[in-house]
Image 1 (spheres, rainbow, N blue to C red):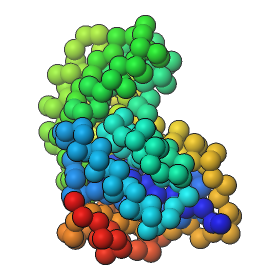
Image 2: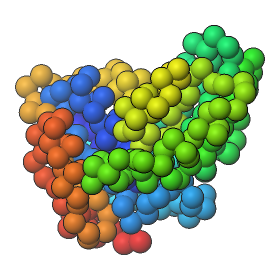
Image 3: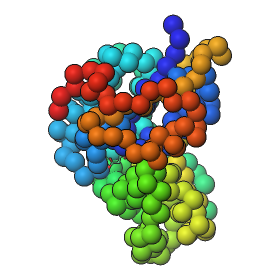
Image 4: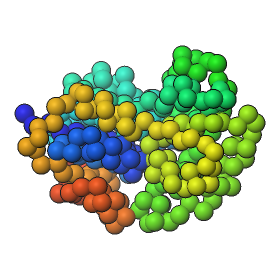
Length: 266
Ligand code: DGL
């Protein structure tokens, strides 16, 4: 049977992951689902959020029938991966903040973790740091504002004017991180701004690693006609900026609320 991938996030962040997957597997059809009604995830309570993610992914998988599910959201992955794997039978790839990579590369043994408020405090992150970066100083910054900056940038081309003020205090603290892990999939969408404002920092995300993992699990059929289908929760219209971004990567054959595909209820 032909392979396809469902990429899931609360909003537009997972598009940074979709972009990488498409580069590695161009013929693969990709369904992209944004939980706009549940957005933003990074300030939500764990238990109801985990249940919401499970219900939504179960229903989307039942209807769209992808071969593989990518949880392109650090907040969701660090919370709900074991639960999802317990209930779904298809392979699931989650996002792990690239703390190991940053620790391997940092010359001054100081790395930063920039993620949502929920992700920075997860036990999963403590375990990653203990395992891979215990000889490093790891400074953490939890930001939901940055998630919104990324949404506004992609949807309305509104530049994140407050970015410098928002992060510079943290990035100026000593020791200064040589490498900062972008532990939220929204943040690579702001990479150009980050690189311009803090050129001495190396910004690291997990998009390419996820794409390699997907490519290793699925053998895309070269005869498949790679295209994108965009779905979202809620009934609001999708901003033209989001569609344009996706159309800039490949062929979008469908864009509609998920509720018109399935009877998803909150
Ligand atoms: N893209 C997300 C992440 O990787 C979620 C952001 C949010 O909804 O707060 O964490």
